[in-house]
Length: 105
Image 1 (cartoon, rainbow, N blue to C red):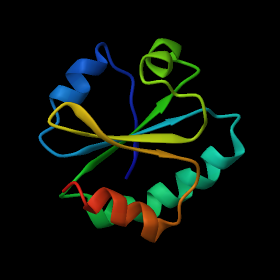
Image 2: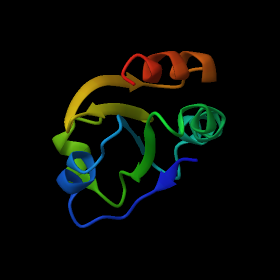
Image 3: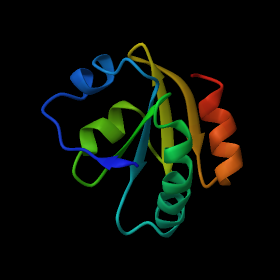
Image 4: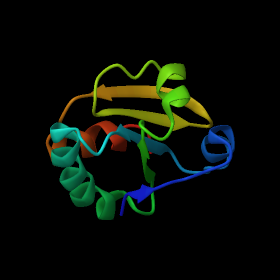
């Protein structure tokens, strides 16, 4: 299951993950983000032991959105060993997202 996170330090979040971490940067007013939320719910059980999925509301964390150059929503960034390794902008099918994420597990 994708988790909506609030955190003191984004660095702690990404550095503390032993598994690849898919961060879904979204906004509640974004229609495509709502579509992607359902797709993340489909993919999450398939990768639950291999990757972690976290949702971050860019309205609540605008500095993060700026730091990671989030200019389109939804944007998903896959982190591995604390570093961004892949970036996905827009809506993908569940199979496409699974394939992209599975490449890093």
